[in-house]
Image (cartoon, rainbow, N blue to C red; front, top):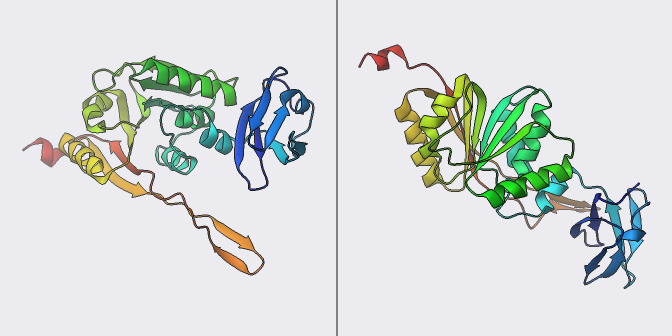
Length: 263
């Protein structure tokens, strides 16, 4: 049942989404009417709740996907489709030691924390203290028992404190500035991944990786997601889709190839 302090996702008849955090003294307010949070507390998931204007809203506890897309944010989040690919390409698993930069609003932080489990650890850097605090708040809202993340304020292009790291994930506008620090931080065989919005940034980043001589298997991908409407004889792609969000570039740390070293 819903209790005070829970996050609740409300759907209206047009499947518009409203994410709220309920307590006994507050109420949900919208153009559809109001709902006292006290009327939600004690109900079971999947309940219908009527607003003061007579509209019915459907209530659930949010999935991680719903929470990340609708959570309070300062910066644009990494969408779940991209988070899943990043985690897979970074080979993250229980026990992994990971660096993330920057923390942003915490969408990727949440996914990494869950995947690496209590035996792993995530060190997440951001230049801005308010970003770091927002990421920490969102993590604790959806994963209140998580204790495997260290939030740090700092510039990873100047210093990364950790060593023998399994994976480094960069959500930064100029990841090529971080390559030298990342090289020192990663273990051999470790993976570095960047998430970038433009192909020009990708080109600059890949050139820097290649010049380093200790990164190999460099690969760039773009993910598109298209939903469909299925109803009776009307089966078609939706008019809207999650098109381009960014390019994922992955590389792996290796020793310098002998014939390159001798030149």
